[in-house]
Image 1 (cartoon, rainbow, N blue to C red):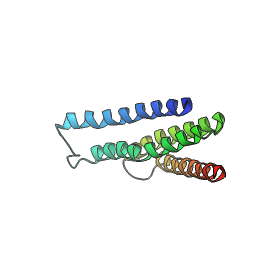
Image 2: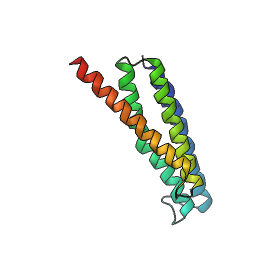
Image 3: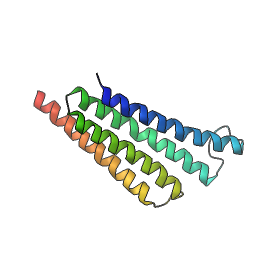
Image 4: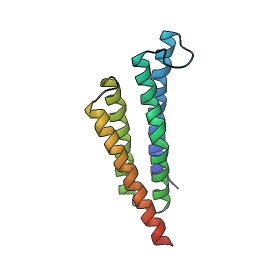
Length: 131
């Protein structure tokens, strides 16, 4: 069973829905069916949601493979929680920085990339050692 990945998948899904609700609320107030209406704040909300959609699946897939391959639960929780925190920081930073530079955006991106790269390397090592 992949209980650890199930936890972080659920938490990331809640984050994605929260970010989607922010987009829908903004579109409803501006009476937009689609797109951003050339509004910077709506464009930022759309990108925050899209960025989460772009990064979360690969990180969760890597976490799942690592869990199914037997990586210790402590490490799975470390990577899962670090990644979830990074996505929250990124969403906050991109929003608060109004699309520009912000420490939350910087650290959120950096930590996301590090978690993805380390999990990728762990999975490659596990796969090669099993050959």
